[in-house]
Length: 133
Image (cartoon, rainbow, N blue to C red):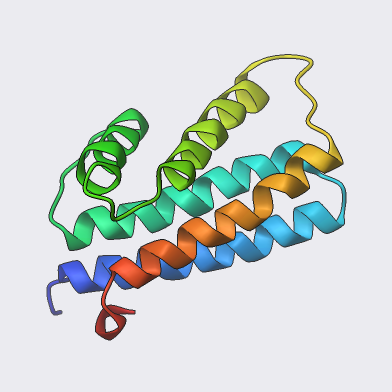
């Protein structure tokens, strides 16, 4: 059995992000707003994870992923500050929706996050060479 290479993990994470994005659309279509926000967060998390692997940046937590985006990509102008802010907002909303009672997001809020989620994934894919995905 061959050993997995970083490219294998990168490709896997991008594919996972794309599949999760499809889940998001299904949740939006069916009115599952909290679940849609949760899955948007993980869509971004998987995509950013691929980028961090590509650049050999180790992280051990969700907070670490958020920190590295700011330090490595926003400060260098590779990722727009608004896209990074979107990821942080999804992180906070996902935490509230998953762990707090009586947090119910609405259709407008959930649907407003979708285009930025797509933009984040597309930007990450641009930063990862086409030969890897």
